[in-house]
Every structure is written in structure tokens, then in C-alpha cells.
Amino acid sequence: MTYISSMLSRDVRLYSNNGSCSFCRRQDSLALLSRLWTPLRPVPLRCNALPWQCSLIPAGGCEAPLIVASVSLSRSYNAIAGKPSVIQFIPALGIIGFAVFGLEPLLRLSRNLFLQERTDWKKSSSRYILTSYFQPLLLWPGVMLICRDLDPLVLPSETSQAIKQRRLSFVRSLSTVLTFAYCSSSLIRQAQNICMGTNDSSDERNMRIDFTGKAVYTAIWIAALTAGGLGTVSISLAGREIFTNFLSSIMIHATRPFVVNERIQTKIKGYEVTGKVEHVSWWSPTIVRVSDCEAVHIPNHNLSVNVVRNLSKKSHWGIKTHLAISHLDVNKINSIIAYMRKVLAKNPQVEQKKLHIRVFLENIDPENQALMAFLRFTLRCFLKHGA
Image 1 (cartoon, helix red, strand yellow):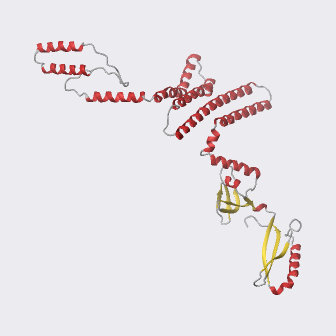
Image 2 (tube, one colour; image 1 turned 90 degrees about the vertical axis):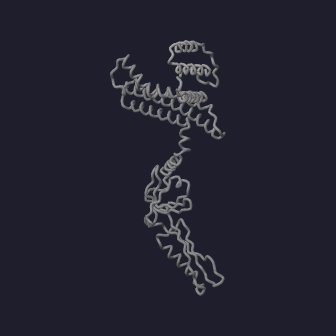
Image 3 (cartoon, one colour; image 1 turned 30 degrees about the horizontal axis):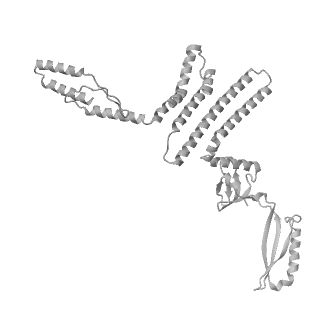
């Protein structure tokens, strides 16, 4: 090709320089035509380069832009040809695009042309079949083709390669399960509507059919989410804390260790909280109003894993006090203890049956010979809320 182009360029220059002589012009024209009609020899293509035919460029023309454009186009073609995965994405994206944007207009046009139906398209059975069966069954192979095209992609590290394989497997299984669940639930819903529409029995049978359909519908989606792993992924990602708090809220509402307006005491991460419960929610944290009127928001998960003392449900208050008696009154200790027991026995707020009242000597200080009588008795709790 280079040889032919150089010959043509030289002949064109000769033709332009000898334009004054008509004979020379005829001779040059004949010579130029004879060279143009010279048979071209095939040139072998290498490295997937695009074939280009020679062009007749007058003398003084700019050949650089044409060469740069041809080289750029050749490099672009080689880059695309060197990455077959990019070309393989086209069928998958075409299927997905047709399922999302092209299938509904095509079916609607065919319905208007062949069936001659002028009813509302959004409420027609054709659109229901399209959105319930055709679109999911077309989207599923598109997703599977994309996963197949990404399979041979090699990542630089083994960890990233393993993560890629796990994600592709998850997408495959999830798309398969969701497609099956969506089509099955649509079929169950359609069968339920048909049964309830043609049933002439009492409302009780319709309620049974409705309840059975909803139960099967819910069971299918729960099984699909469990099999597809969507629940595990959502828990392991951002929804883990929310889901954990929700489960803890269920436990709190079921066991009822405390309710609103009760005083509780707990210790969370070294911070002790004592106050009155103002709000217990399913999703949001529990609000506790402490002694300085400050609202403390405690996640329900922390309340379920830490020790919580319900002060409002405390049946008895233990009171412990120390009395110092002079060594000069040692002979009066027995009478003092007997008198204290008599006073406690007459007090109606002191538990007399279930708990033992003890008034005894605790220790003796050998340095100053001071005796200490330890008084330990239990009273019923009559404290007001918030006191």
C-alpha cells in the first residue's frame, strides 16, 4: 500500500507541475491511468489491524490527520477486541433493557393490533401476566448472563477473587429464588382472586380462602428470603443493629421486666443509670429519666444483655446501720438490744414473718474498747415513684 501511495503522489506532483503543455498533460494522464489500473496485491493483516485502501491525496495535502485517525480507530478496535467480556455484556444488557423498556410497549401494540381491545391497559390481564411472569423470566437470564461474563475476570489478590466469587454466587441464588417466589406469589394471588370471585358461598369461606392465600404468600416469601440469604446479608450489614434492637424489644415486651413509670437501675459500659422509665419502643431506644431530670436513651439490646434492677418491684428494703456504744455502758447492752427488738416488733412496716430480724454485736475495737452493735432489720417499701 505504501508503495502505491508514493507512486500516486509522485505522478500527481508531475501532473501539477506540467500543466502548461497539453501534450504533456495527455501523456501524464495516460501514465497516471495506467498506474491506477495496476492490480493491487493483497497485504496480510496482522495484530487484528483494520484494512485500509489507498486514497488519492493531492500534492501539498495534509496526510497527518488521516493517519492519526486511522491509528486511533485501530487502537480502539484492538482494545475492545482484547476485552471479550465487554462485548459479552451486550446480550445481557440487551435482554434486561428489552424486558424493562421494550416488552410492555410491544405487547401493548400487539394487543391493540390483533385483539382490537380498547380497555384500560393498566387494569388488563395482559399487563398483569406481563409484569408477573414475562418480565421476571426475562430479567433472570439477563442477570445470569452478567454473572457468567464476570466469572472469568481475574482480580489481583486471592481475597478479592474469593469475595467476587461469593458475591456472584449470592446474586445467582438470590435472583433465582426471587424470580421463583415472585412468579409463585403472583400465581397464588391470581388463583385466590378467581376463587373468591366465582364463590357464591358465605363470607366465612371467603375469609378462609383469603387467610390461606395470605399464609401461603407469606410462607413463600419467607422461604425465598431465607434460601436466598437476603436476611443474613441485611443482618450482617447496616441492618444488624436495628434487627438486634428489634429482637431485644420483642423480648422486653414479652417478659416485661419493667414497664413505663417504673424505676430501674442498670450499669452499661461502666455508666450507672438509675431512674424512671418514660418510654419503651419497638425500634427506638428506651428512655429513662434520671434524678437530675436528664433523659438517657438506652438501646434495647443493652438492656437485654445487662443486669437490670427493677426498684419499683422490690418487696423489701434492707436497712443497715451502726451504733457505737461506750464501754461504760457494757452492762446495758442486753437491755438495749431487747428494747430495740421490742420496738421493731411493734412497727407494722417491719416484716415479722418472712425475714429474720437480727440485732447483734458486730465487733469490738481492742484499742478503745468501744463496742459496736449492728442493727439489721427489714422494712416494707413505701417509697413514692421518683423519690
